[in-house]
Length: 527
Image 1: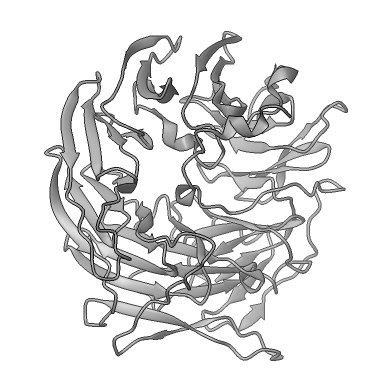
Image 2 (image 1 turned 180 degrees about the horizontal axis):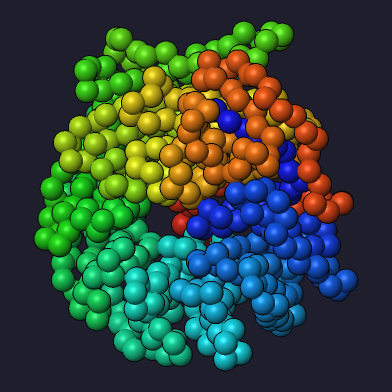
C-alpha cells in the first residue's frame, strides 16, 4: 500500500466524480486540490455573510461545479474555469431544506421542503424554478427512492402521494413540465428507478404487501406486473403471513433486477423478459468449498506495542453467521436490506438485517455464492469501485473501527485491513468519511478524511505501479500488506487554509432506512 501525505481537511470534503479533484469546505473558503499533484489549484473565498453550518456539500455530475447548502441559502460555484457563482435563497417560512441535490445536469438543483410540502427544481441558466407538490419521500435517508432521472434524455420520474394515493409523473428534460402522470395500482409504493439504459421505469410495492414490482415502458405504459409467492425458510421468524419487497437493485448493464424481501431469499429477474431467472437463498449454515471462501475476522491482542490490524482466517469447517440478539423493545428485523452490484454486474454483495456483520457475495453468471465476509461489528457501509470490477471496501461501526477500511477482491487472501491512524498527523477520533477515488490507474485508491485531515491510500503492491498522485511531488509511505510500514519520505501535514471547519458528516447507509412516517406532520400540530 502507499499513503499520500496528510492534507488539511474537514468532514465536508470529497473527491470529484471523475477522480481528478478534491474539494474541501473550510470556515472561510473552499479549497480545490488537484489529485495528481495534491497541490491547491483554486481557492474560492466565501463571503462574510456565509453563516451557519453547511448541510450539503456536493459535486456536480460533470465535476465542474460545487454546491454548498446552508440554512437558508444555496450556493453553486465553478471549480475549474470562470467565476460562476449562483445563489438561491430559501423562503424563511419553509425553514431549512431536508434534502438538496444536483439535477440531471450541472445547471439544475433539486430542493426538497420539510414534511414533503414540495419539490423545487431550479434552473440556474434561466433563473426559473418549478414547484412540484407532495413528493412522497423527502427525508435525506429516503428522498433518493422517490425520484429518478432517465439516462440520455434526462426526463424526471417522480413519486408523489395525495389523498392517500400514489401518483407517478414524468417531467420534461428542460422546462420540467408534466408530460404524463398516472395513478399506479399500488397501495404504498416504496420506490421507483429508471434502468441504467433508460428503457424501463421500475416501481416496487411496500414490504407490508405481497412481493410486487411493476415495470413500465419509457412512456409510462405497464409492461410487466411481477408478483411472487413469498418463500420462507424455517429461520425466517415465522413470516407465514407474508412480507414483501425490501429493496430493488438494478444491475449497471440493465440485464438483471434483484428483488430482496423480508425472507432470506433473493429473486433475480431477467430484463427485458421480467421473469425470474434465479432464486438465491442465504443459508443459515455456511459450508466452505472450493468455489466458496468464508473469511472470519480474528480478535487481536489489546495493548500491544506493535501495530496489529484485524486479521482474517479462512474457515475450513461449517460456520454460522452471528445473529443479532432478540430485543423485547423493538420488533425483530429479518431479510435482505442491502444489495449492491459491482461495475461489471457479475458480483452482488448483500447484507441481512438479522446478521448485520456478515457480507454475502454472489456470482450472478454462475448462480453461486462466491464468498462470505464475517466481521465482529455491524457493517455500516460497503462500496464497489466505480471503475475497476470486483473490488469492494467495507466499513464497520464502533470506535475501534473508525480508522479502519477493509478491502476485498476475489483473488485476495481475505479482506485487507487498512489502518489510517498511524499515517495521520493527528489522532483519528470522531466521525470519518471514506470513498473510492474514481480513477482508472493500475492501482485503486481510497480517499479518507477526518474533521481535520485527509489523505489518499493506494492499493499498489510495488513501486512500479502507477499512483494517482505524483511520487516526485508528494510524500509517500509504503506499507506492506502484512502491516509493516517503511517510511520513504516524510513531511508535515500541508495546510491550505487555517481554522478548518469542524462540520457534520458521516458514512450512512441510506438503503437501510425505515419507511417515512405518513403521519409525521401531526407530531407538529399544535406546537
